[in-house]
Image (cartoon, rainbow, N blue to C red):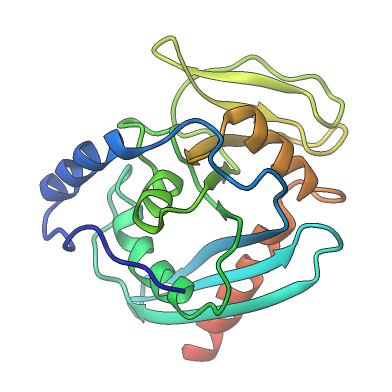
Length: 226
């Protein structure tokens, strides 16, 4: 999979913030993804701070039946400090390497993290979407910004995630009576469609199947490297 990196790696948090503020204007919030999404790639990372290693995983599934199309993992050195709101600069380099190793271009990327639901409206899902040009969605296990009402207890119930009066995502119940996830647009997909696709990816569990498999692959790759 061909990817052209859109910027140099920052050396300071201030440079990283400047990159986010520059690139966020490129985010597209409307549906520019295939009308029928067939393949989805889940992205996740695992860290070992003691060794300074990070493992990134990309797992592509067919959305109907969850057949694994392909999967790739990369282990590298952590190249950016821990800074809330700037996790993409730690995670993006190895994630892009994992994506480059894929043979097929997926219809959608799903990140374990946030997109618009970010202080500068440019979380990991936005960043990876803009630099790859692919539709992307962020699915966070916990809230990063904003406030919301509690959605209904039934699967598919949702409540808007609001930050300074702006809708930046949705709090979505993916299983009856289970803690919801936080869905936000990354790039080239609407929030309504993002929620639909996340529900398709969560037939049995709280988290998308793509995230579950990418998480497992990243942990295994990191364990083998230690």
